[in-house]
Length: 292
Length: 233
Image 1 (cartoon, chains in turn red, purple):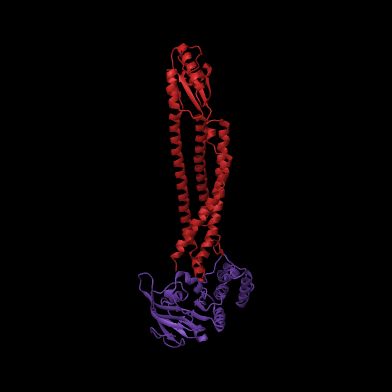
Image 2: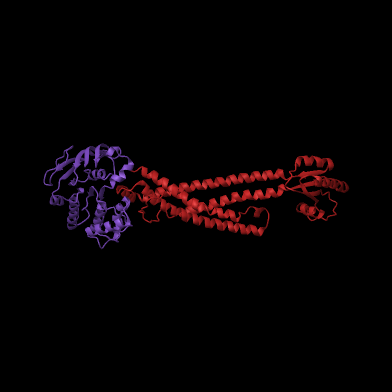
């Protein structure tokens, strides 16, 4: 690939001086978009795994005695169902805490017809048919409502998938923009160095030899830009992780990238440098073909 | 060795700069190319150092028809041709040594070969104490000597010089021409374009005379220009 290299180009910074910085900005945007897309994917996975191992049964009956009877019946049925590891009734205080954002702080004995809530833990080994279980619950406990979270979880997953596609499209656009910028930069470089290139040709230099001089120059631009971009990207991701850690376990922390993934991001400067070099080589080779 | 037969040259759709130019340069010969400004001297030299292909006619370099040569064949052919440009065209960011070394490095010479040959040649042109000087610090005569050294470092079969004495004083002109004559004695076919009639008279080599794109031949500058196409030297 390299062959004999003859560095005949002057070390001028005109026109090409900003290129490493532009590559750095592009890599920064690319790294953030990839990190966001991957983090959304892993966050949704973790979240949906947690919810898939858990279902909720509400006993919606206004009469307290009847509610208690139906709750007991539902509990018995649930505990006898294969695939159910445990089923427990939420304490009245916990239920009141759940509704307090909407109803305010009410006393437990306020005689409100608050439904009973049964938290059902699945063992994750034996699959549970939610629809069949719901039908059997309705027979044993007519006021029972089974919620396996699938309805809104599906919407969340769909939204996450759309966001991921958008983020990967952003990555694609950033890569294409980087290629276009390198091509423009390279053409400007060719115009700037037209005279040395012409003299090298007249002295018998082959296209490959001239291309290699540009290869090295643009590889250097790519490496510099890549390093600048990845340093800023990793710093930004680290700061976001720190902020998320202070928020605690939950939605935000589920979406922060982990250390392994950040290590993979270190490959991006290598990719950026190679992409810059190959783009420059193809651009120079194409331009040289127009010369005699 | 090098023959042009009925060569015509035009740039794009413009008028023909060269018309029906025919001549032959025998191996080891020395020729001057003279003519007024706009006669087509530079265009003819560009054809000789393979910067352009002719619009029409047959050109043969070292036994190979230019029309049959592909783009990939040209670098090898160009390495057999040394060129001295009127404006030197040295690389300003390289030292005299590095400028002269370029053709050798293009050819793939070893570091030792480069070191030995370049130093020897720069001593020969009287620049042994200017090896590491950049062109910006050299005088016109020194630059021209570096350009000549770069043109001949590969021991070319053909040396093409475009107004090599145009930017130097008469004394330096004489010294530079002496270099060309010495190179020619070593077997390098040489063609020098010049306006300096005194120089041409002093050397006494055959003269190719261009006028309005057509080639004539004179044996000395004293002869009247014979605007004559198709003559072979």
